[in-house]
Image (cartoon, rainbow, N blue to C red):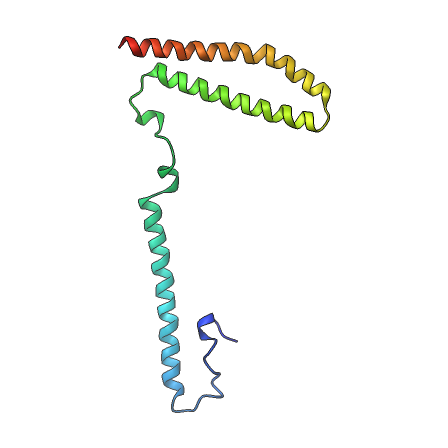
Length: 138
C-alpha cells in the first residue's frame, strides 16, 4: 500500500528488476524528503502570513486605549455599544419567547421595556449629548 498519493504509480519491489531497484529506492527517498520539506515550507509560510497580517488585526476597529478620544467620548461609545447589545439581546429573547408561545414571558418583557429600556436609552443619549457638547467646546 502506498504511503502517499504520489507513490501510487511506483511498482512494488517484487516487480522491479534488481538493477533498477536501488535507483528507484533513492528516488523514492528523495521524493519523500522533498515532500517533507515542502510541507515544512508551507507551514512556515502560513505562520509568517499569520504574523504579518493577523485577521483579527486587519478587520478590527482600533482599541480604545490606542485612540486619542477623550474619556467622555469613550464613555459614550461604550454606553451606546452596551445599549445596542441590550436591545439585540432583548429582541432575541422576545422573538424566541413569542415563537415558543410563552405569552406570560412576553408580557413580563413588555413591562421590563418600560421599566429598563426608556431610562437606559435616555441616559445613553444624555451621555452622547454631553460628549458632543464637551468636544465642541474644545
